[in-house]
Length: 95
Image 1 (spheres, rainbow, N blue to C red):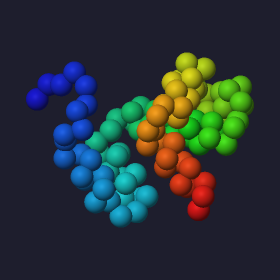
Image 2 (spheres, rainbow, N blue to C red):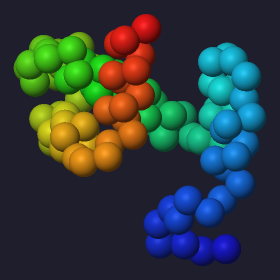
Image 3 (cartoon, rainbow, N blue to C red):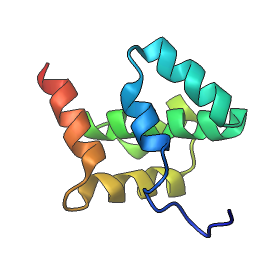
């Protein structure tokens, strides 16, 4: 099964929804992702949290080790219409 890019049709997404705790999710992602893939996802989420909290790029670069290109990419995702990541972060901030 070769794909050029994700389609959203995989059972992966249903499996993620079945997970009950952050630890269970972490262990599942360790099972299906390489160390570098999981590290990159965590870094991007951390960047998104900081951007949502209005941190400046240089502060984010210092705290995460991310390049300005990665930070810019995450910022574009947060600014996009219908960004699920933005919705999740806003809901978390409202808790």
